[in-house]
Image 1 (cartoon, rainbow, N blue to C red):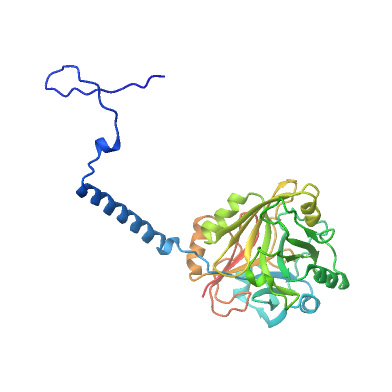
Image 2 (image 1 turned 90 degrees about the vertical axis):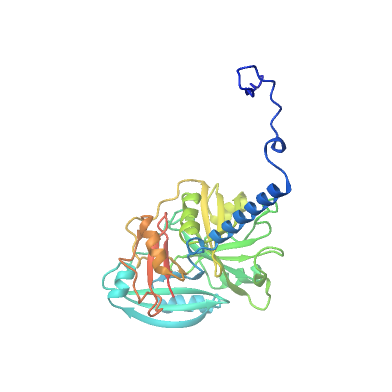
Length: 371
């Protein structure tokens, strides 16, 4: 198709104009030294303005760490024996809390609970036993693609030795056995993983990174269990979840993968499992791994009537320099809040720090703790 050309009348009269020369930047924009200097100056100003906008408080990360992961347990002494005796966690604190603030934080009336923090390496779990009122158990028919699924990935230096210890402890399997992810999967090649249950049917993962993958600290050999790399949650829509964890909380996408095949099916114990996996991280602490099942799509939604004392109610606890600002953002975005308001005495026994609990788009609980 011929391109139409536009000719301009250059004379005072209406004489036909001669054909216009082809347009080129050099023909239309002055290129003398003064003009070149002006363009360079304008470009520098634009770069500086962009950098300044990137450093404004509104665009800095809202949270600065994933502080710990909270799990509700039915019998604290039994759970402590498991986590400290089998998985080598160390007990840090043991407190009992009750009162109006804890009720408003958790959205449960008449609360009295025992809270114990345990540490493995640099990472912590927070175990909570509700002395009153008691919540519901983890559904016996739970599957790894149900959207109340959440686990923590405990790193081991030796999968064979870790598996032998778990078998000696008679853990209940969630995988058919340890799996080595295939070499064709560049993001996950060589990773060894195994899912199993704690005494309350929470799913845990023990994972070993091959050389060249994972943080350098995960390649130590002086201990069998080294720490917690991430907590994983099942989501219905990765992009919708990223809008919460990245855009509301300020986490950054750190990695992506698409996993499927025989090994993945046996790891998750879900026939035909095909997952889109996205890992987000704060400046410090474990990551948050989003597991979207592209197949099968029959995972059940998080129960709409879930409460903080149910055993399937996990909490990802994050710290924020300004928890009130995060709270205002959650309200403005119409997020589902568990807490009736930010309180200054929270379920983590953090004392006078402001804290509140919000649900992500799939119902998983995130507790924001200020300073």
